[in-house]
Amino acid sequence: MNFANEVWVFIEQRDGKPADVSFELLCKGHKLAESMNGLLKAIVIGDDAEGIAKQTFTYGADEALLIQDPSLKHYRTIPYSRILNKLVEKHIPRIVLFGATVIGRDLAPRVASHTRSGLTADCTDLKVSDVKYLKKDFNNLLLQIRPAFGGNIIATIITPDVQTQMATVREGVMELSPIDNHPKENITKIEYEPDPLDEVVSIIEQHREDNKVNLKAAPIIVAGGYGLGTKENFRLIEELAHTIGGEVAGSRAAVDAGFVSPERQVGQTGVTVRPKLYIAIGISGAIQHRAGMQESNKIIAINIDPDAPIFEVAHYGIVGDATEIIPMFIDVFKHKLK
Amino acid sequence: MYNSIVMVKQVPDTANISGKVMKDDGTVNRAKLPAIFNHEDRVALELALQIKEKYGGKVIAVTMGPPRASDILRECLYMGADEVYLISDRKFAGADTLATSYVLSEAIKKIDNYHFVFAGRQAIDGDTAQVGPQTAEKLKIPQITYTEEVIEVSDNKIRAKRKIDGGFEIVESTLPVLLTVLKDVVSPRPFSAKRVMAYKNAKSLIELEKLAENNSLLYIDKLVHEYEERGHYIKTLTMDDLQLEDSRCGIKGSPTKVYKVESVVLGGSDHVGIEPTKAGIGELIDKLMTDHIFG
Image (tube, rainbow over all chains, first blue to last red):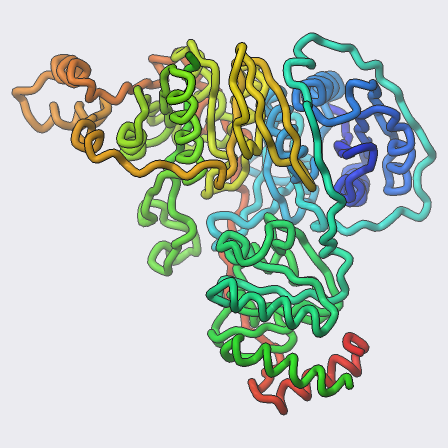
């Protein structure tokens, strides 16, 4: 097969600000490219986005492909996917990574569909390896690792027969670590060629608030699960978080039940966090949740079920009724820190 | 008048996995999982029905799946769909999202004459949210994903509100367009008792073939004709009907392969147990203070 030994990362920007997840993916992409002796390229699309292209080198990009036009200021499906379709067809990168954001999940499937590439959503880990599959040898396959089937299994997905392997990854999953001896700036500007199709969807208005919740940066997180039972009981989580100076979070089940807002969801399809202290209350600890918090420095699990899987990743475990233990915790804490 | 095609999926109820569903080797026995109508697809159908009620037109539901997926097509009829299609063939088995979008897009091209394609944002068995956009790309039409509200349809244009990272936007698109919808956009209507009575005997080609097999007095062509006359025929399309490329269907047409599956083994737990008492919690807080996590 005739493809470039390249790892590409789509650099997402909103209102001219780059998304954290894109830089996290560059850091991972840098390692992947190294392990296959390839190059890491950042794909930057936008208006006046040269500043963003320059930042990508700090995170290990060897080259940035920059496509700029005033009409590309805000993400729109057709022009962005059309540009990427063409670039991927022309250069045939080995790997393309996208953030599993609203934009990434809108864009990646279009590009994968057009180029008939493999695409795996919400990977929790990525590796490059030579693989023997069905008695055939394949070089530099991307191992796309993700929990599947209600979290009962962890699947490693490969796409051996395609030229380009694509994956999306949630924010926070990969660690952000600027590269010391980072590559020199190397920006290649690519001309935008407009097409009438690009204008079939127009943005009438847009409202965006800066994310007030920043779970990734919180040193202490108090997370509640479905085990709390009611929204009223979930208030106790907020009270405890307030008392000890932490942020409130929840499991997917708690979000689905309406106990807590979706931007506070920790786990595979939410945010991945690494706080100094993570307190998991009434969370059974399905693999998808653990994937988002198990690297926390210290974990306290509070659960009525002594066999709950959450205790496996916990440093401290308290078995009991959360509605009794939380008030006790608050009381003792206030007393101690007087 | 605006016609809608709604893509629906029957999914294993992954939210209710019990011990019995897991095989000894740790893999999931799909056959033991109850099959349900993917909720977000039901929401998509409701939205299409509301557009029909407001502006006129037809609502057609399609699903790709095994024969038993006709269960959810009957449910679509109970809710108010005008026509339903089962896209089914042994050779579709093992399809990933790319192969699925190929088959669905070819079926939609054949049905034709549509202004909207609707789908749920994602299905609960994979949560990938890929089939919608992948189908739109193959149909060469625009898409509005993460739809929160359809504001207006007029002059062959749609205005809709969609979720974006950190907020929302209002977009306007020409038709045809594919929309994927979020779970709370509208609440799906209950089945109409009248429609349940009218359509509970609706059958797909595969179901009619079974009937004919078990009764030598029945001839399949005649059966299909009879059911069609009564409006009880679930239109059934196979690979041949759609003239599909073999190499792009099912497992052959699916680039993603499962290389390895590890069951999640419950390992030993070596955490420190804390008594659920004030004394126990006090000691824990002391430890965390020593570690400079508190205080």
